[in-house]
Amino acid sequence: MPIDLADVSKLDVEPGELPEKMAAWVIREETQGEPKDAFRLEEIETPEPGAFEVVVRVMAAGVNFNNVWAALGEPVSVFGYGDHPEFGHHIGGSDASGVVWKVGDGVTRWKPGDEVVVHCNQASYEDVEVHGLDPMAAPSQRIWGYETTWGSFAQFTKVQAQQLLPKPKNLSWVDSSSYGLTYFTAYRMLMHQAKIQPGTNVLIWGAAGGLGVFAVQLCKAAGANAIGVVSSDEKGELVKQLGAVDYINRNEFSGMMRTGTETKEEEKARFAVTRAFSKRAQEILGDKPDVIFEHVGKATFPTSVFMVKPFGKVVICGATSGYNLDFDVRYLWMRQKQIIGSHFANAYECMKANQLMAEGKVRPVLWKTMGFDGVPGAHQMLHENQHLGKIAIMVGATSEDEGCEIEGPGAIRAEVGA
Image (cartoon, rainbow, N blue to C red; front, side, top):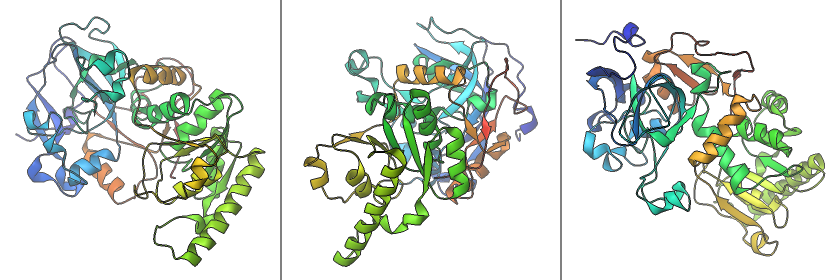
């Protein structure tokens, strides 16, 4: 029997009781391909929570590029690792807001009816790293909804209890579902890895993108001075609105972007543009950057290493332009700079970052909200680069404003991009 999408927001069970079946957008190994075809709407068994697990009724879910990869089966298929071999299917979605519906054995902090936001880091409670080092160092560390199944593109999702955070009362379900993965990543990079302080000078690549809009706001909240690198003056005005002291339009310095195939003469010309870019940033900040917020990789990394202040830090969480980095290492060791890798965040960092959301000191930046039927199309848009910012999916929620309990700054509606 076909699933009636109009009924997805309706339930005939109360908190504490799960229905036998639920609607979910499912990717299977044989359907991998274009996102519009890979996601199939199915009615599957609702998962039961195990020990220290919670089943959450999903009210809204955020869309991220990781499930474009899951759909395509590239760069590697998700079906060979995580819990996929056990269940045989993939339900994507690494951002969610919702209501605790049923708790497993050992869960004492959360109860049915609690309103929550889900962060996407999972790790085994048995790994010693969880209990003295950092869960991000645990061998079992996985990103929920990508490296695991039971993500948020379903009526219910199953998570570890430690993944839950109180939903900010000033945000709607949609707003609350739109920030976790990128915002918590930016928080760890700046606050715990780079350890920014009041007065720290920070250069942010892609400042109007999914990571950058939060990096800018975090710098403002911390009293740091942020300069944003963007691809248009319109995006530059947005990052100034978010708290940057100023911006640089990277199209004015396009010759600094590294391809890795430059001839000796081309590299000399590229380096001259890099020097000019560095000079512009220094004029704006009054000094060289103490910290550079990196996620572009190949095209920008040589510039980052060159221009960061002696003893400064380049903190990186990704490489959208390529992960094979080619740079002049003399600028690293002779000026005693640091390169710091970073990946998502642990539960404590997520909690601290979420408090800033509840206080209105950081706000989600959302472009578009779609209904539950929009999951395949939203990922196809990301795949074809037709999106202009963060997309949220309504699951249990029936309107964009539903779930907001107190007055306060909600999401900023804006077209964004690196």
